[in-house]
Image (cartoon, rainbow, N blue to C red):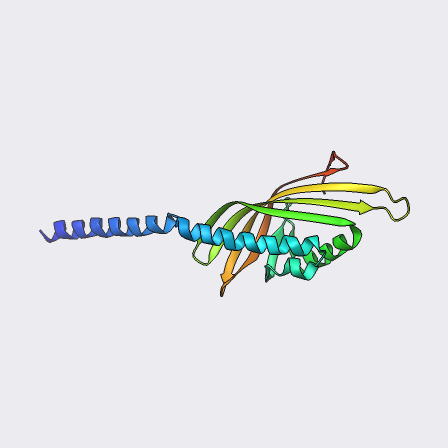
Length: 173
């Protein structure tokens, strides 16, 4: 008789643990919606700053240890991103960035976000005054973490990237 109760106890415990694990896997739509809005607002803040060529404002959404991983698995730390972004905004005439969340999966104080970024850049040659139009489209998987009441991006991995220059596709190194 004790063996049957033990087996029943194990079966019940297994069921309870399975249900508990399943409930953590189910997304809470209200949490996902609120988090999506909060993180989209952070992307919007960065886009507005970048459009104004405000590198510091554009980078304000990142954790100090934020890492970027490109398609060739090269990792770029935040100081190098800042240096590259500063050089970019100095070289362009106009810049229009727009980021939109495609998907989001919230896990407590972390969120995995798939985002599409569309950037339109014009560059004017100072000598010839010729204008070059560059359009970039990137999709990345970003990891966000909530610090206090603020969501900050901790990691970004480039998934896909395309570019055109004056309407013609160009390769990106």
